[in-house]
Length: 235
Figure 1: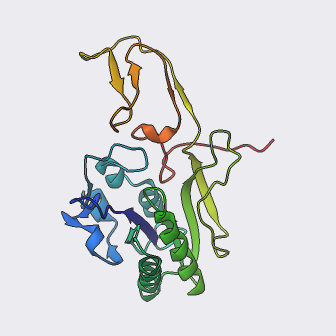
Figure 2 (figure 1 turned 90 degrees about the vertical axis):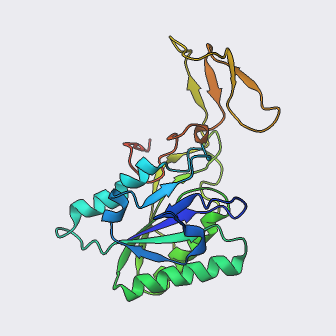
């Protein structure tokens, strides 16, 4: 099975992720058929332009779901997708959703699960607690996630750990800086533009080269679900 954590926004009117137009924020773990991803049942709000918020196209072409689909009936039986609302404001809420998700997976007869997520920050605690709850029920898990690690790759790669999370696949770092060359052609009326949206954010030259502090400043700059072809070589 694929357990997909869905980051929600408790402060805004929109949940960030909707299932048939209904806020995922208002639900516990929900089992869906993988075809529903292809059909566009999962949609996102268009006001959060940051790399760790997948766009609707990403949900429709979810690489983990498609990969499991390709192996269905060959190496595995793809039971389906469990949507898990994450980023609860209290630790109690995080524990409840973790136990609820693992219990649903067990009732479905799942014996192994790929665990993925969207977002950043304390939502990762929900993900790790879900892995812990699944493993304690005999459901083997593999985490698929980007890393932090800092600009030089020497900081802690993940925000929270549990001993049961002993299998993980990295999809690359979100913290490494990015150098973009000056464009050959600029389309638009502005000579300067703001990369960040907060009041007083510095302006960048539209015709000059650009240095970004992290890849999460670009939509698609982070590989949330392993859809790219990143590789790692140990020297």
